[in-house]
Image (cartoon, rainbow, N blue to C red; front, side):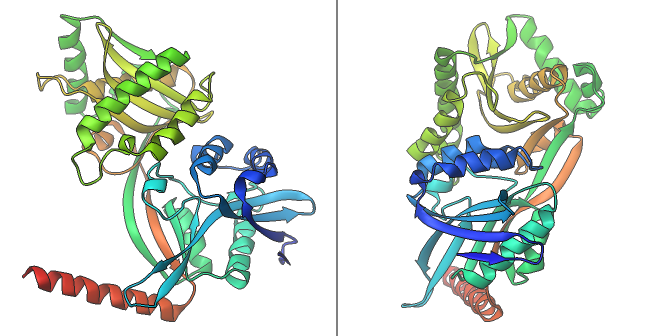
Length: 375
């Protein structure tokens, strides 16, 4: 299918077994070099996601003359709703709509767009999707407020399903760890310095990184064990209990031998890895993705705060301009950050007003019935 937009962009839509579409990665890589974007839309992330995703995905491609200027990959599926015989056709951007397959949790989601005329290209793609594709709901997330507003301009009927704060550290004015620590609150700075002082009294402390495959295996196994220990029994659970999640991240890490895209750091105390962090990297930003941290028996010692400060020191030394903690509130993120980023959202957009009103109305009724059954 194709369509000509007012800005001379031609939209094509293809759907077939995605693994037989080798030009997608090639086109995505070429466009990524011309886009102003982030690690979650990097070819490395896309390729790892496609390897775990359903065989048949929908590729929306915008071209200006012969050059690809916009790309988006959707999963389509149909789900039953509250009433028997009532179902919904859904589109999920760079997700599948299935919890287990989406547990890798993309953030800063959007179309991949040429930085020249990005907003106009996105609008043309959204208009085409509305006019020519069959769907009832379109899911975007997690996405920044700026991106969400761009979608809302085309699809005004929407419900925000999740909102999450986002934190980062602007490193551009720092030349050393001390420069950074001076910007923190007195309490946070004291906790970091006290942790380091107490540990140095009895142990050798170092921040180490995994560079070889054996080291990566050791670090990956260790971070998995710590993460499962902390999260397995919670409502969220641990992604490391999900083989799709594990295979996805092993592909990212182990197919990156020179650590261009990923980094595993570990806080080593006398050779024991007591805290580990998994970082996604771009030339100017390091994104903290997840961690696995032991709890010290002495509550004055904060392994996590110390580890993050030492990783930030490494980032400063390498000329990195931002250390992103990504979405999700945590006290340590707020304590270590100097920038509160725009909120990220998971949003469901509705094709039509009547469906939006129907779904929201039925959802309210369902919630009321659930509350009344508990009283």
